[in-house]
Length: 335
Image (cartoon, rainbow, N blue to C red; front, side, top):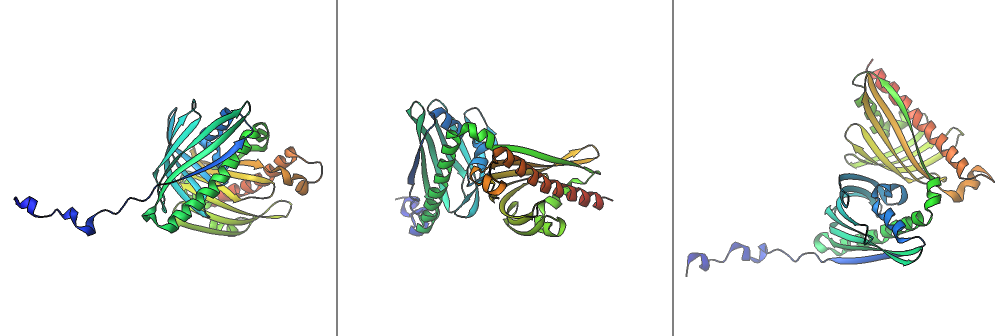
């Protein structure tokens, strides 16, 4: 008998043996949609619109993008927490299916993937099924419960959003609108000061006349959760809550998770762009109008057009004020 065969391999020691792999669990969430299957698939396939349409989704950033596959990072809320992960999606427009798999998951998720499947049920109707398979870190019951709860909540919200967008495609074109405001900041090297002004929103109550209160949490660098009270030109006060994602030193994207009563969604972006002699700073807004509150807030007989005008004026006034103060702050620092 050789020495090698006489000595048990170290890997056979009980304490060194790997434990069982976490169990893979599956869920299915479904909805019937009064829209053609192709229209439903189009909403599922265009992930860039999800933050505007679906409550849990905060931001989507493409890392790679091909005709039938894409790799992206997603930020979303789950059970009141902000999570981010990297996923790869494979698109099959003929079969009306989109498969996805998280490449990098966030605890308590150990692994997750699934499929969006659209099935025609009639000339202008369809069924949308959302399949998930997942495993939990350490297979811990509390982690399984957390993931299941998040999937139930977020899947219901996403299915409801897709149903609404697909069924009201013409109306959504009227309800969703965007605009931007830009100021030029004079002076070479002013970009970092402008960005610091925008990034340090915790100092806005001291720096901006329309911000009455602001609570900021940044437990993960570059991922900010903020609650803010702002005043508008008519003297009213609005409380909003937002998640902000900071990219480098020139871009901050955000989504309001609590919005004023005239909106059902509000996303935006601050950008700092170098130009000859200084920088251009832009505030971009995309808004979805909420129709059931228009007459209560703006008066009898008012509609979407009046709501769009009111929202545009209010947001533009506040963002232009912020841009103006950021400009003054940066130019003063540079003399």
